[in-house]
Amino acid sequence: MSEILHLQSVSRRFGGLQALRDVSLTVNKGEVIGLIGPNGAGKTTLVNVVTGVTPATAGTVTFDGQDITRVKTYRSARLGLSRTFQIVQPFAQFSALDNVAAAALFSQPGEGLKAAREEARRHLAFVGLEAQSGQQAATLTLAMRKRLELAKALAMRPKLLFLDEVNAGLNSAEVERATELIHQLAADGITIVMIEHLMKVVLNVCSRIVVLHNGQLIADGQPRDVMTNPAVIEAYLGQQYAQRVGAHG
Amino acid sequence: MTRANLILLALIACIAALPLFGGAYTLRLGTIACMYAIMALSWNVVGGFAGYPSFATAAFFGLGAYIGGVLLARGAPLTMAIPIAGIGSFLIAALLGAALLRLRGHYFAIASLSLIEVFRELVNNATDLTGGGMGLNIPLAASAGVMADATFFFYLMWGVLLVTAAMVIAVSMSKLGFGLSCIMQNETAANMVGLNTTLYKSIAFGLSACFVGAAGGVYAAWVHYIDPSDVFDILYSVKPIVMALIGGLGSPLGVTIGAFVYLGLEEVVWRNYIQIHSGVLGVLIVLLLLFLPHGLTSLRGWRLWGRAKNV
Image (cartoon, rainbow over all chains, first blue to last red; front, side, top):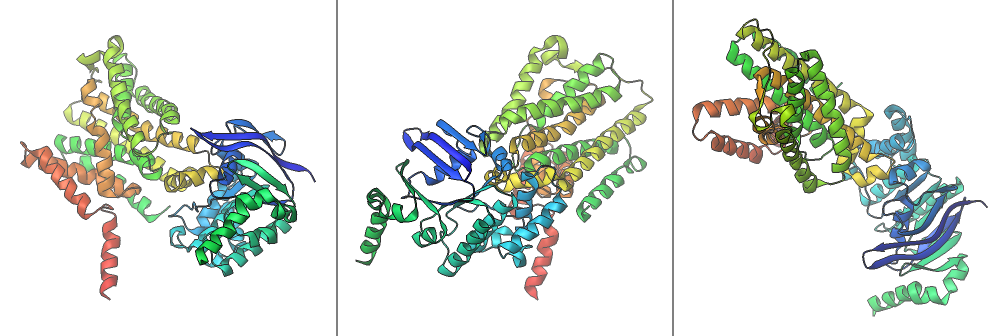
């Protein structure tokens, strides 16, 4: 398998907070990686560092053979790096169609608005929003807005797709539907890195799991190995279990 | 082209007939009306489309007036001075915009406000070129009488208005307009879909300065004398915003109507309450904004909505 993204000793500091500490990670083409860890572990920061929203304070990020450590967000987007946001970021006053069209229009050089809308229609159909294409994004339900995020990310023809908690706040039927979409994308050969708290989804979809804790990479490997790793149970899995027990008791 | 834009062009075409109906006073009002509409339409590009509350209108009006004025005083023809005033303002604004537009919201508003002071001080201190605080005399063009002059400058200002309206309509239908709308709604997301927001905002800021600068050049030629406190008047920054709010933010037709309504209010109030005209105008504006927060263009929709509720 060939490498598509490589992080070499990446650190990111926010004032006194070390959000990422010496993280090295390789993502290969066609992989579906689950990025897990407790709240505040630095998962979203990792995505922000790669996409250039908050560039790394140390280390290098290589994407498709190109150093993108200091590359601006809009440029890395055009290179084929796309993401969805944990807190959905639609263009609220645009219709669902124009939201997706904007993604197609600005990520592909030389694309016209008309062609972009045509393409947008296809992506909306893929995520099952064709009936809502004329509806204002602000009026869509959360589940629909999450799928709209996904359609926007797809319209950018990504080589690597970051999914930041696409399932948070969805009910189980909606989660099932989103999981199905992710399976289809993976089958189409898109490399995916997903941040996810629902272990059921992670185990169902991912071929590899990476665990962050306090900004450090504490595990990286096959799902089975990671699930039995004592450090991971200590930092994340056990804690979650304890919380569940606490809530019921 | 949308119906509102067609109405806008028709409205501007109607204004061209003004010299048929009035004397020098009407033409003076008409020239100012065109000037206000240019300012409001220009402000709308950065304030309405991109959502950046700019207070820099006066800065570029003054800049254009001085570029035009200095060129005219050195004997350049009007056909050269006005375009240079516009293009110069565009370039300077686009460059400054690349730096200033990193700020958002209130911070950007204050930074753009400071541009007026910076330019005013520059003009004040470049005495050799601009005459400094003494002002700048611009020689009279070969005049064919009061009415001929008034008509000439009215059409000159009207011409700039027409080009401004054409620019604004073209922007609203283009990829640029689409991108600016994305930036207004969600700049983070706009960046993330591959939109070069800095470039788009700079172009918008440049375009919003370009025709204001050209109007400044026309103004300088029209009044024959400019000084820093006249053309760098902060009111030139505030008025376009009020006009846009009166007319309806973001809509080119709305802000143009807003400009005309504002001028009407200003003139009527000034005539009738000469001693307290600023106060009365202020109260009227506050009332308008309180009861019509989305501007005059919302009136039509509001009436339809009222009817539907009664059904």
